[in-house]
Length: 503
Image (tube, rainbow, N blue to C red; front, top):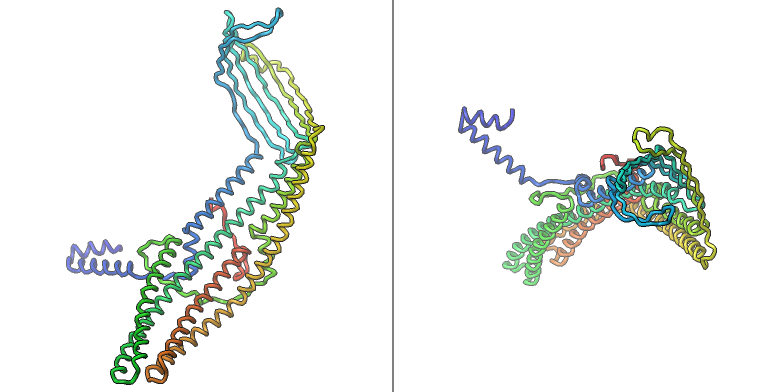
């Protein structure tokens, strides 16, 4: 039974008991709203991948690439076009040829024209095949005896084939699928970049929250030490200089707390803004130090990066585009020829019902050629420029491939040693904190000076911050390797996504 039904029942039967339930429900709701939201790094990344600005941008960029590729594929499918002129009225003075010669005469006509065309590109050859059918009606109002004529191309088969020319369609069929594959991989990399960015926002806030806690603890410690020191000073057990140093440390601790709170507010705003979390939600981050270590094989990482990384895939595409540019320079402006052939049925009549009766054959065939005799080396220059650019691209790609492999190797090497750094930093933090506790206890019994206490406090604070920084580097390296290789080495599986869900 729902809570509102229970309240309504007891409100009717026992108003005082119903009021109590309503009050307790309100208190429970307020407490639930005031309870801080604890978020792990994994949860923060999941939220960011769903609703962060970068994730939404990556999604829409992939959609744009998808529809661009769809448009390319559709351009190679048969296209059906309806065309025509309705009406085509013309009243003018025209020059016509007669037996006596050319004369000018006024004419009034109306022409209605409509047709269908089915066209198909032939990507392998670069030709175009089309089927056409059209019907024309001509009304002539010039003479006193007005007349109407019909003309029809019942069915025309037309083929147009460039010869010895650059075949753009053939190269597009090679390059466009490569671009779309790059777009797929880039989306995955953009999502992994969201993980990297979220990790940075997460640890910026986590570090700020921890520094705030340290500052508050230090404030309380120095307050206690300062109060004890004042009593010991009044008893003449410590010098005034020690008391002044503790007072100074206490004042500095107060200022540090204010600075730490301001930093937390700033980092909290940035964190919530990136994850698009409501402003009134209080968040406490959980230190991501509970994980199982593993090693990444550098050779495996480089292999997966070459297969999956969009930048690595672009190497082959850039070489292909440079080769296409050379082919275009070699063929354009040289010896060109174009074959044009038409075969069909046509007829004309004064009565529409006879338009399909006894049609006549229609044949057209032409072969056009173009051969430059003298171009002063323009074509040769274009070829040389294209070849030079191809060599530039090849050299750049080879160097970038070397740099790419080296970057992957260094990232893997840094990650593989990072877990040991985490263990060392954790141990250092424990030792530094224990050392501070011992130093504080010894100071309280007057065994050491305030200087030794300050040094121990500084080392404890530094060790805690260093531990968080090392953890930060570990997780950032983890997600950067995922971003570069698009492979999850933790579970030994490639990173995949259902692209249909993005459309």
